[in-house]
Length: 357
Image (tube, rainbow, N blue to C red; front, side):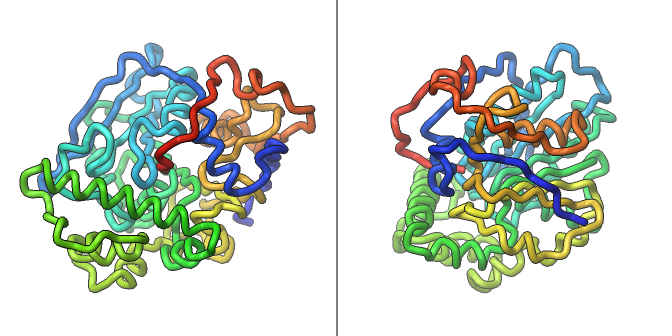
């Protein structure tokens, strides 16, 4: 049986997929990581990624590490990445937060952008971690786009020797299904938003980075398929967007994953559909933890057995540390006042101008 029981219970005012998706951006918990070291990692084509290394004092050589991979248009500073890295750091786990091509601190170190077909970009970071943390097994933890890259890498016949397990949250395993979901009236806003943001990033790169592809002559995309046709397809060597979607979709290769793998997804995710995961053939060591609610990278829950309401964080920590054999049960306790929702680090934000994975 490849499905795990999930007892996630959303906070009553955040019971919808859109609300869950936006909640993680409207409500921000303050976490600080001091002493972060940066490592530049070269790729075969000359572009570079950046690893942000957070090493707890009590971590020792050979202890496990975690490689955190952000989502589309995100970075090492994405709230969910920093939040989980901080909690792992508190538990003595060394984490490496990667900035994929053209993202975060690596924005000026790459001529091109990342996409779902570039899972080989995760191999050099794994090799570099093997050099700075010899003998340490890696848990690869990917979010959305990062989750798809992680699963694609794990499905390869040969994986990095220090890669020991994988967790993927809300991964787009079937890009055709994602496109269909984004065509729904209430979901078009996400399609348009990401297309605008991606286009802004590649235009800025064309203007500031020598050797970057020039895109000013191309029509401005209004949705992700148009962006992929204009930019991803020619740079990736694909015939067209359909060819890219087919090759980059890991759904038909999930059964080839041999590493212990957990996938976390929500049925009401407005960006990435859960149905391809539910109908896919999974490998014997791959398990799907599916919730009825949670949105896209949301999973803001009621008070229960977890220290705060970020249910997702504690499921990742359980998988990384092996602290529990089963999913924590959420109690039916009455909601706490807003000031106690997420603990002492909570602050309310002005509605965000950018929604990035």
